[in-house]
Length: 380
Image (cartoon, rainbow, N blue to C red; front, side):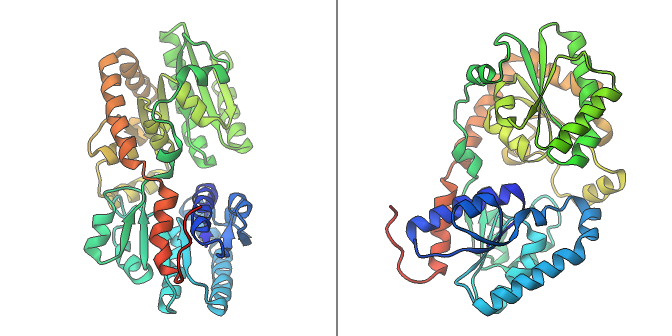
């Protein structure tokens, strides 16, 4: 198995546990993180090595990553394991999966690349490389069916773990926030580049909203010490120490659950906000040339998963030059002022949650077991 970054480590750990319920004899090794290792995974390299941020970082680290990939393939070719499972990290894993498939080993990829959003030409590479694709979203499997790639919809693991009816009062109590206050969660991203690009805009947005409401507070969950340092620097530069703002180390789910409305960078956090049934505004800002390139390659009119999954604009997306503090503050204000719109959105997100709740790990394990040979043990 090869899993990249924290999200891949978590997905793979759940899959290992589910597979072992059926086949306690399975041994797992490759590239993985601490959660996989807690399930008995033997990590030859740690998963954080695959955490590449953007094209520039990928180019800088190409030689190192290529060397690791070649070394791992040498080991796999010698061992001839029952299967190769790549978890996310398609730019790293598809090469390994193609080599495994060509050598007669089942090559399974868990989490479809976003070919429905951009770089759809990769479907040909995937068809040559993958024996089985495991898809998190229901609209993905028809794309693979058309290309002749065996694919199974397994649902999204967040839908399994998130409650259908989040307890906002309990989340506010855990965070020691006023039950009657207007709370806005600000999520400028988990990566340093995202926080660097978005923090000043988010802070100015908070300043505008604070001027409009007396009883308002802001929650800012940040993933790492470095992103917290960057946000603190932005606060200092904006001379915004007087804002009613609470910076959290982690606790993103609690912050969104407690909030009345969420301002979020596009990404998995927007799906989390949807599963928590929170009205949101999605915003994103990257380098101008990178934005032009990605926009030219995009197929869909949306970047946010809530809109993509609903097939229409259910929450506003303000991107790049449109993401001004005034525009963001006004969009958040509209959610705060419109009770009927918030209620309608909750109904849409409840349906979305039910569609994605599939017991992902067990469904993925069931799809993989036929490739492993032998007789499946009964689930304990």
